[in-house]
Image (cartoon, rainbow, N blue to C red; front, side):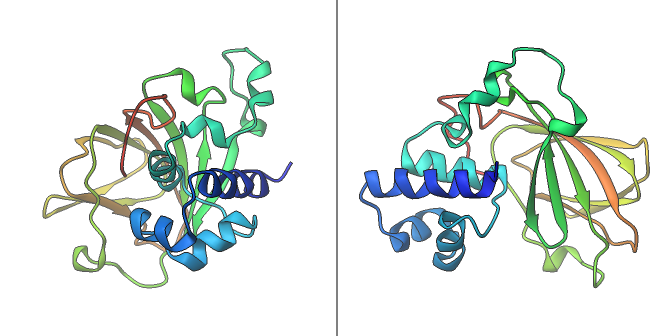
Length: 197
């Protein structure tokens, strides 16, 4: 099953049910009209954080974008081959670690950060601020974390835990793939959370 097609079709269905134009959804979400159009046609994937924002705007739960048949298997074990993968941009790929993400208060994910074409600096980054907390653990490579005006280099086995309201971002400034495990709370999959990332 192509998750992009399924999610895109549901975004379009929820948008039209709410009588929103692509322009209105673009203005409220901060996502471009072109991107939203491609998303609805199944030509683009979307980060969970951005999908959570669309869910809030459209007045639906985040889990409503995903096939409910996946919940028929109630095993607490999440298999590596079954992880849902999506490409956030050309340099970041995310994997949902937990197959029952909406059943828990925190959201674990694995990110693969491709080598940077150019060296980034904090001034070039879009620093993130949102509700909650997050934990980052480096599995492979060297991760650069920008946090409230400071820069930290994390090696494999290093971790950092932050309050998400503090301006932050992380990048791969090396020429090798960086793999990290992150855990965010609150979980945007949990019904009723109006989380804006």
